[in-house]
Image 1 (cartoon, rainbow, N blue to C red):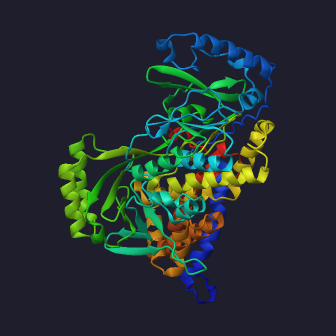
Image 2: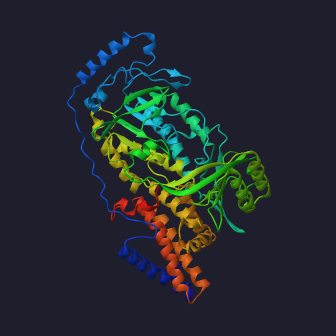
Image 3: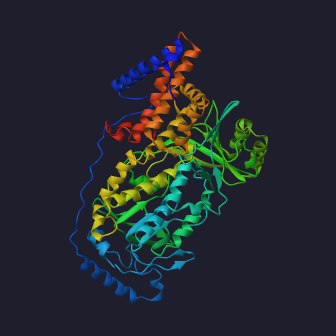
Length: 603
């Protein structure tokens, strides 16, 4: 969108000059006083990575310990053998005597476990790679590492491989779908009745805007997928179970990991009344957003910023009655958080009602009454309203807490967080699975850049170089911070309770007005929403343009007080997005990321 200043009216020129002046004043004000409202900054230094500590025990001595314990086991009766050969009761040498070299060189020709009930059972203790978690990210990582390194053994640990549903994680954005296809995972989206998603419809009062993913340079129409989360994950697990070098273990991982100095060398699991210890040179943790293990590993003193909760339910046989079929729908409310409605199959749709902190009714019936009275009348479709009322009478509501968590790199060797274990963004934009797949893809790219990891035994000792390469690539190239900033900033703009600044509603109105300006104003934001583009510059450009629209609307309200209203609107926009961008490392050249952590608002 080109701005022809020559054609501007006097009021518009004043508004433009005010934007520049207020931005400069806002920057000076915040730098002088050193804090944004509701935000406390700290200058604690991040501990530096410590060097690997080598232990003196040789591989031959470890093998002698193993052979001795194995001989004891062979002489046991049938009942003790149910504990299996390699459990802490039969083989548990001192952790301090195990080195990374020992684990890499130990039993190179060990066989792969056999299948049990469609999953692989394990009776060994040493693996090349351990992956904790069998969700979208954990399965995708196991599949790709198995294909890349067919001679390496991989242990995947999950508490339950049974089918389960979630009310979030049911939307794969267009950018995420393209990544899934590039990784060869798109076949897992077939045969699960997934619905195509072509964009969003945004509603505010009586007005609506249709945002469609723009076609690429070749004329192809990007599309996402609305899915049942459980169906997609089960397809990924089925594919993972067919891989010859991946072992699936149903167990719960203890929060107490096996450590050797500052290096994680293994995990302890609990299942069927037994405790087992497994060792690997490297462990990935992809256990989701509410994992106590990920919480323990996080270097943040407090984990996640609570942003209220989503209350959800599924409506049936009404997707064709949505105002925009095969589109996600966002209904904005002036007095509370947004309402989301999007198809999860060709017949079913998911409804998510946002309750900001302090507004969630206590009982199930109170929540149903609130939705029937305050939410359903806002839905712009009579058939959809009837389906929602019918569902409220028969089905229970499901609640999930909404949290925001900035990424922080673990200051330990031998372990790495991925997916929602690493960072979380508000689920408003439905970008969680997309962000997780982006992290997996960029990690695999970091392996390619180093061109040595997991290929030779000694390369395990240089894993921290790969992680550092991935971390830098993540912050500056793959665009994961842009996805998180967009989701968190949009929620702040769309939800009055997200801030105490009364001019937030002005930004919400300006954002909607900006969407109505035409295709040139829509293509950029919808490419960001769909993760088709993950450019920080594109996000900043459109955010500034929304702020300019807010300034123009301020002068329309009152010419006399327009400058004051414009200043407050710009200041509100600046205060909302700057801490979020800082937490994501956008300003890492100038400030440490923990300079912007909103500790006083976290759990």
